Image (tube, rainbow, N blue to C red; front, side, top):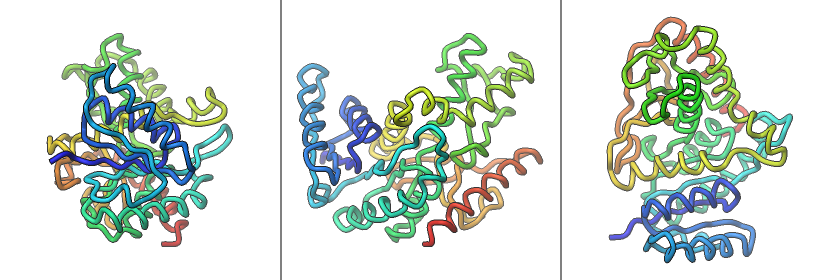
Length: 308
């Protein structure tokens, strides 16, 4: 039976995610948006790429949630994007209302779907979707760590002068300035980055990773990143739809893992057909625990501000 992916929001991130999902042939795609004509036009444009790229699945643009019925995965990208001078937290109040409405409508038609939330600030928005949907914790996930880790790996690869494919590195914690790019575990084909770069170079890469989003916002002036955020969400969706058991850093709801309970935060998880099938827990150093605690404090403040 063909899989079905709904992407809510047909802006830059949503349309890009739809493109990646089509080229990876993950299933039939529904591009949903409240703005009439935009999802239909972008959907039709993508569909016409089939003869060129060779994909065989369909894509439908719609303004009606009924067309999203029986989706296996729902990716929520709807919301306002950052502009220069704005923090992710500046978006919180407006995007809570948007994500709340999207979630309420979507889960009525797809009660068995896995939700992947991309809207910023991600940790607060995935909490919003979790509270509104009533879904179990394994079926509500935030996209953040895949994107942040991709940026971290890119910067490390550039500094060492190697392919990013051979860089293994992970970012935990909040999707924001208090994120935790793990230096201790970062390596190039098994060789610790601490043996390849100076402490000063590594510290600069950590800082650049933490501010990776605003660096792009400042370049674009009128929006935020969308190519890699869209791809990161689709990488998560692919692991779920194909039941590949990928280990990816995602914003997951913790119930005691890493000493944290009742909070969404970026940690390594096993993604499969049931969504988050397992959280990979490991020992942290004192400094890493302190950094994760700072992330937790930021997330809890955001959660409180959702008023849910």
